[in-house]
Image 1 (cartoon, rainbow, N blue to C red):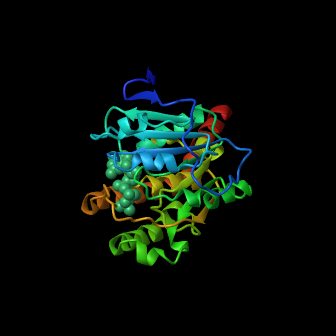
Image 2: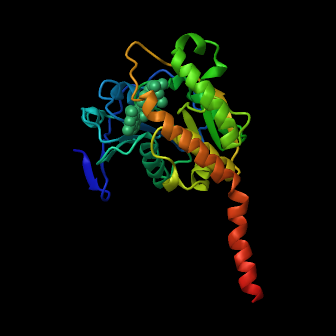
Image 3: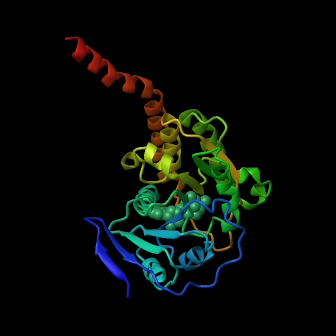
Length: 285
Ligand SMILES: Nc1nc2c(ncn2[C@@H]2O[C@H](COP(=O)(O)OP(=O)(O)OP(=O)(O)O)[C@@H](O)[C@H]2O)c(=O)[nH]1
Ligand SMILES: [Mg+2]
């Protein structure tokens, strides 16, 4: 029977742990066998896709943490019905947004002792076959945070809808400036792998909770001196593709996030100097 624990005012946990795993999906080998891996799956009204997404995670991933962002459909019930070692369901009592759902998953993975945390969306748009490529820069010791870049795959131009390509190019160019990472592209790709150190280096409480969170996270990583690199991943827009993004409704918040994160990032040297200076002045009095 599933364990139920009250985790405070907004979340309840219902762990779906069971002895018999389902058959392991075909997948490439784990490039980071010495590290404890978690996959965080933010999900909002993903009843149709969530079971397939969880099943698709290779068995060499120790934990799968699904964060149900107060779905109105059967998302949570579909997860509870699954049997997989290390599978957990964390539920928001109120809808808080995809960024907040990911932060909830990050916190749970850190509390469980995970060394590397991957984000895979609950809508099936992230191909588990790309996991080894995403983890490779961490395995090499060359990155603290890796993000997928769908534009490294020439098929993207045929697969991604033109409106998404247009928005993505604009936001990716703007994010080079606001985040400070001139070498990264495809800023809106949510397929990411973060080391424990990277997650501990940023203030997770302040990450923007809705669309725009990837742009905000990048600026925070840059201010913390983290090494970020891009890895090739496939764009997935299958026949069942649906999106929660309403373009007119996200233009203003994402513009605000870009401006805010840029101002915050460039102000960091000044903000860091202030307490030090105040301390020196107090000591000399
Ligand atoms: N829309 C929406 N999605 C959320 C929310 N909380 C978590 N999610 C999950 O965040 C993931 C990404 O959401 P999408 O709306 O598909 O956005 P996207 O995949 O970045 O963009 P598209 O290319 O338009 O599909 C999905 O797994 C959602 O289930 C929320 O409050 N709203
Ligand atoms: Mg989507």
